[in-house]
Structure formats: C-alpha cells, structure tokens
Image (tube, rainbow, N blue to C red; front, side, top):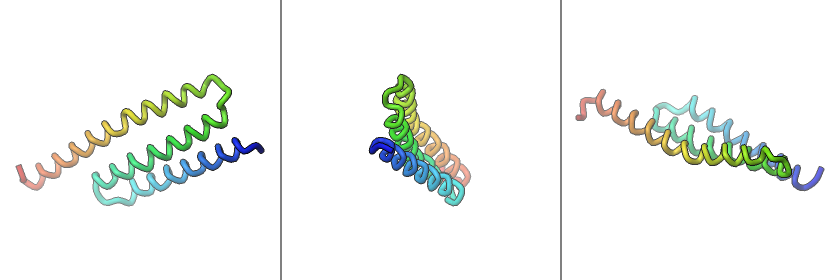
Length: 100
C-alpha cells in the first residue's frame, strides 16, 4: 500500500466515525435544536472527510469532480437547512408556550 492509500483510509474512517457520532447524537439528544446541531456539524465534517479520502483514492479518475460537486452542494445547503429547521422549531415552541 502506498502512502496515499493510507491517508485515504484514515480520512474515510475518521469521516465515518464522525458521521456515526452524529447519528448517535440525533437519536440521543432531547430537543430539536440540539439534534439540529448533531445533524449539521459532525455530519457535514464527516462527509467532507469521506469525500476527500475518496478523492485521494480516485485522484486520477474523471469522477473526482462529482465528489467536488457533492461537497459544494453539501456546504451550500447544510447551513440553510439547519437555519430553516431551527427557525421553525423556535417558532413552534414559542407558539406552544403562548409567548407571542
């Protein structure tokens, strides 16, 4: 195995570990706002590590650009989705509590 394969394997395994901890956080956290944090921060970083590791592994293939597009789409959409979920959860909580 070359050094690039080792680096790729370490990045992919680290990304998988972060994604796994994010999934545990989504199940274990009590409310929507803390679950949203677990769904965005480690999940996106874990996905980026997996994509970078895969990109290193297939660096001479034309399909590496699909990984770049996937990473860009995730980086652009994850904060927007998290903001919308957080805003909706906050508004519903205020509405239930009668704190207009």
